[in-house]
Image (cartoon, rainbow, N blue to C red):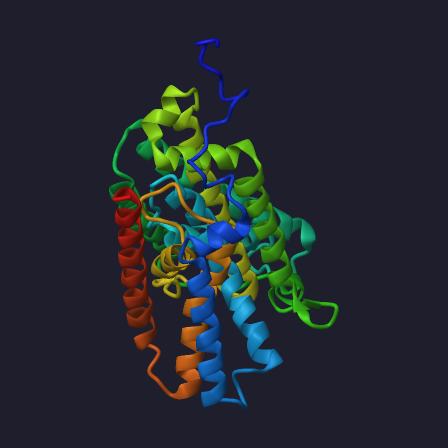
Amino acid sequence: MSTQQETPEKRPVETPGEPTKSLGARLSGSNTLWTGLVLIGLCVLFSAIRPDAFPTLFNAQNLMVQAAPLLMLALGMTFVIITAGIDLSVGSVLVFAGVCSAMTMEALSGGDSTGAGWGVIGVGLVVALLAGSAWGLLNGLLVAVARVPALIVTLGSFGAALGAAQLLTNGVDVRTVPAALRTTLGTGTSFGIVPNLVIVAAIVTLLAWWLLHTTRFGRYTYAIGSNAEAARRSGIKVTRHLLIVYTMTGVLAGLAGFMSLAYFGTTTISGHSNDNLNSIAAVVLGGTSLFGGVGTILGSVIGIFIPQVLDAGFVMAGVKPFWQPIAVGAVLVGAVYLDQRRRRARSNR
């Protein structure tokens, strides 16, 4: 038997069992299955409380549209947390990217972008993606190269990105958004029923699922989260991989900012204070471990609707919406507690 170590190209390093398990095994072995049951239970509960408002097509469309930008944040967060990292800056990066996009379209239109065409809108999209990627790359450099803890780096970026957005606008939202963007992407539908924002979110989600669950990049993501040093010794370029993961998370936050701009028709600088909590909560509720190495895209998709359903259900039930972040926070702590118990039970076998 040859003692020569195989390269990652010949034998990709994987988290033991995680990438090779069937989808059903991964779901039953994580919080994903329970999260799905909780989501169904909440929908049944609020449907019973408000049968005239909650189980309607309009409410379903509204829930999906509002979840679409948040889902973009959760997709990037899934990759980051699987690598045993964290990104607290995604909500602020969303705001910053939306501001840069709106101001660029406004400048190209001579001060009022309401009547701007698709050429200007395309430039606005590129600017949003570049603005998001710049913050993501900065986070990645500080985390992967400078070896500063991700919690500290992204907490700093959280304040810096929001502050930069406020400096650019003097704290006043940009309210001139191209009407074509609003009517096509923001409020438009396809097939007379499916919101276009949801279609965009679904396409990006499928691409993220493919990348994480079927490619070498995804296997390396799991391997780094399980044991970064072992992954490095096996030949995986951990620093470069983390740079890509954090940059991709920034790009997705930039896309979320553009989608939010299209939907609301304004930059909503102060409207995303809970996005960081909600995106992290969705990913953890979906079965992704904060300790790294475990997670699925499907779980994050299911988890993203928990905050949205709670928010809509509380409003319809007459409960103050301030209870929503309290409920999400409590469920998040419970999910982490269950994850710790599962890890301890596995290590004691």
